[in-house]
Image (cartoon, rainbow, N blue to C red; front, top):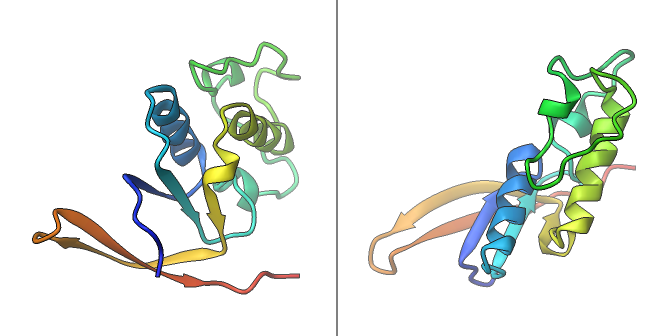
Length: 127
């Protein structure tokens, strides 16, 4: 049984990392990020085909609280964006809140407890 948290975030792509970072900056530290894979990054982890890159100018495709003036190109390649996400998660103290290998199988509102009940299944790591 998973312990209770004030906030549960499903996924560690841009939205999940950004939400966790902003919550921590607002003083909310009782959070967990549930990630079914064994690494963070969402789309930028999963799509590593040749030529994968951002279709938005990179200076616009970063968090306002973590600008990156060092993008190598105007439309940065996938490995660079994935590195950026990992660095932001580390710099913002989000990494320690991630539970890898946790596939969310159900989320049900519990009106009596006024909270969400989230069910997960641990996934075996791929090698």
